[in-house]
Length: 127
Image (tube, rainbow, N blue to C red; front, side):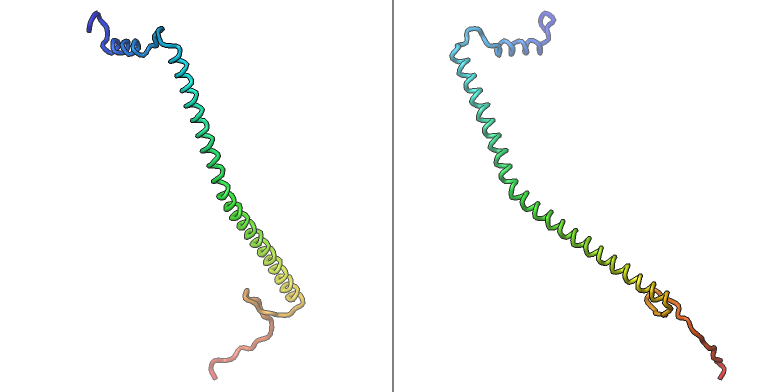
């Protein structure tokens, strides 16, 4: 350390001195650098827009397929709901018919185990 200065600080000062544009740079060089910078920026912008445009164009077939799949699922759901509605109506009609038959007094047996009314005799097992 010379004169109490940090070696890192000396290194930074040297880099700053090297990178600082001098007043004696050519005006033509500065203009050319700005033109090149603008061209690179414009080319980057055009490439970015092309990438976005190509992405949108490639996305169209995927969206078309997805739209078809959603439409099929919607139709399937609608058909399933219609079938469930018809089945519930049929079940209601069957229950109403059973209730009306039971109220008239016909003793029909079904899978739920209704009671059959009538007389019975007990037989002796001793014969």
